[in-house]
Length: 242
Image 1 (cartoon, rainbow, N blue to C red):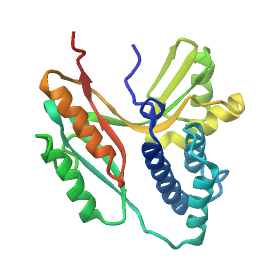
Image 2: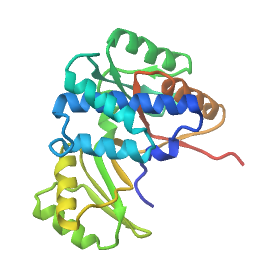
Image 3: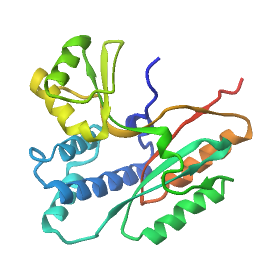
Image 4: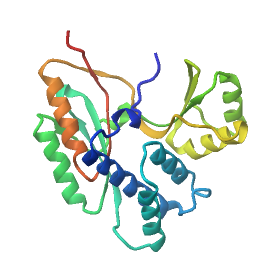
């Protein structure tokens, strides 16, 4: 049983309106990443990973180019990251990552999602200590030892390696993301990463059942409809109804 993490592809938009939202979220994230670390993907590994992910999620190249052009110009919106956390339906733990140009508006919008679903927004740090902020890199392969050796030679602090069904998944602290990806590319050439993300991984899970299931789905839908929300992480394990 592998460690539970959310693959963006699984929640990929189905409708045109939702696809537009996905494009907008990627555009905003690419803009902020390029502005912070430079617009050249070769010199900004976080940006390169982000662009690769965007392409896999079928974000059109003109959306990516527009975000990079905006970052080059140095003008435009001034987005900053914001993170909110608390307890969702069924008392599950939730982390909401945002990029915002108006923190007061964003906080109000996120808080409303909590209050309208009988949830409770908490103070910074109230639940994040129960999550690991991890870099996750998954690719086809079965030689776990060679992967571990390559990472250790590059002095990467590896948290865990899984080898399941012909796929190797590397977990490392979020701060080791660029170093881990570079080490793997140096050792094995250009890899096609099935998962290439930084996420909050829950250390424990909270079962959600009964009336809380519908409330939890409503809670996630409300958050995902907000333009400022980039990612939602939780430790809920929805129990299947018979």
